[in-house]
Image 1 (cartoon, helix red, strand yellow):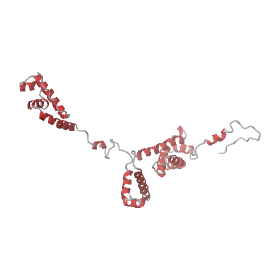
Image 2 (cartoon, rainbow, N blue to C red):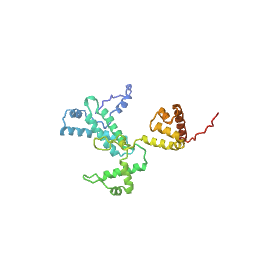
Image 3 (cartoon, helix red, strand yellow):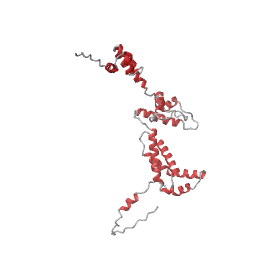
Image 4 (tube, one colour):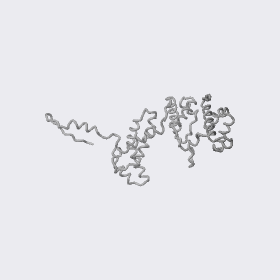
Length: 288
C-alpha cells in the first residue's frame, strides 16, 4: 500500500502533526493478520461440502502464523512449542468455525479464542500438584520419544524397551515417565469410573464413617467402670438403658422409691464416666 506524504521544502515550517505521523504509521496491525474479509463472507454463504472445506483450509493457512505467535507466548512452561502450536491451531479452527463476519474483525475474536484454548490445555494437561523436575523431564522425554516412534502410519505402540533404547533412559525411568504422562491433574471424587450410565464414581469406592465404631469405643471405655459398680447399680443401669424400663418400673421391681432410683442412676453414670475419662472417683467421707 502506498501512503502519500507531504513534501516539505527547505525553509518551510513543518506541519504541527509532522512528528506524529511516523508514530501513527507504526501503530498498524500485525504482519500475520491478513485481509480475509472476502473469504469469510464467502465461507458464511456456503453449505457443508468440498468448496466450503477448501475455503476453510485457506483461512486456516492464512491465519496460522498468528496462532503460532500466540503459542509462542507460552513457551518455556514445560510444554514443547510444537505441542503448543498444535493446540493453538485447534483454537484457530474453532474460531473460524464460530466467527460471524457481521460482528467485527476476525482477529479481535480469534485472539481470545486461541489464547483460551492454550490456557485450557495447561489447566487440563499440566501438573495440578508440584512434582520433582526430574519426573517432569522424564515425562517430556518419553512423550517426545513415543511421538517420534509412532510417526509412521500403522506404527505399533512402542514398548518400554524400545523407548529406553530411543531415549537412552533406563526401563525404570521410562516406566516412571509413562506413569507421569497420566498423572497431570487431580481427579474429582465425583468423576465416573465406569463407561456405563450407572453413575459409579470414585467416591463410591471410599468407605464412609460408621457410627458403630463410636459405639464400640464407648462400650470398651465404659466396661471397666461398669465392672467396678456394685451389683445393684449395674442391674439398674442395665434395666434402664438396655431394657428401656422407666424409673418407676425399676423402683417397683426393686422395692425402692423412684427418687432413689434416679439418684442411683445419676451417681452410677458419673462414676462410669469418670472412669472412662481416666478420673478415678474420689470417695467422699460421709458426714453426720
